[in-house]
Length: 298
Image (cartoon, rainbow, N blue to C red; front, side, top):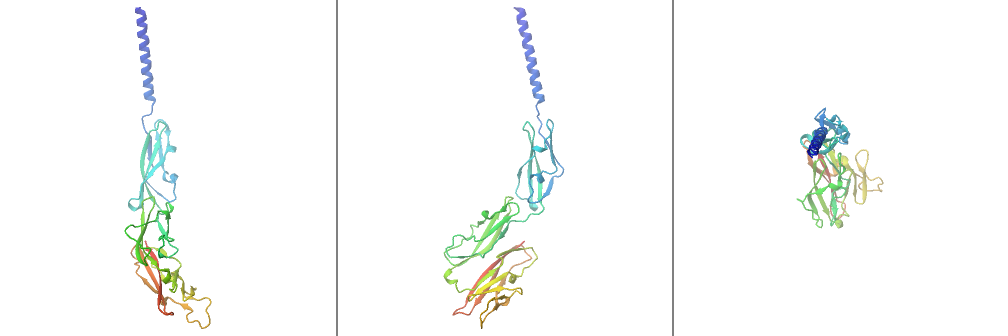
């Protein structure tokens, strides 16, 4: 009986030692360290069209157990713009035990430009028009077409049932948090009073120009319809009736006959409007047609 008890104790001790050794090996064989991320530079300059490969260039990751785990690197997030249009990118590396390490790198774009608006028709709308966005569109070098993100400022209100000129601000934001605003004048007109007015048509209705570079407003006038006659721009800049009738009193329109109110300051960034007006005195009463060119200096 005594021998049996001793044998039981021996077996218990052996089992306890074996279990302890197993746990020791298990603990010591487990990787308790996360990967180490190394960068050849803490910032990188890339194109706006760059992908993760360019973002991660020069970044490696090593793990004490797994060795090189550079292939596990991913871009976790990219911040909104900070100073000088730079962004912070957070990258993450993983090992086989799902330990993760994060690091931050600064991104600077070599070809960034702010979201750019375009307009193919003037912001003039007949009474009761529901859509006062018109043909306004916007593209962004990071996000592509962001027209669907254009919003109208709630600070202004356009009475679509009342003719008049109304201030409005359109704005759009891209995925990097760059908000661009376009302050304009929206004109609501009565269609019944438009038939006899001269119609001024421009080649563009919104143009961008670098600070310090002025534009020639007259060069944007493509055609003027007045008295039922379409005067079209010639190579010399004069608008002429291509098929004048015999003894036709007016066959051409020059820059002197169009009143152009240009208050744009081409040395100061901002959004300006150039107003074109022409009056037709040939009828029973004088009628004036007008249109605006939006100029963004940046």
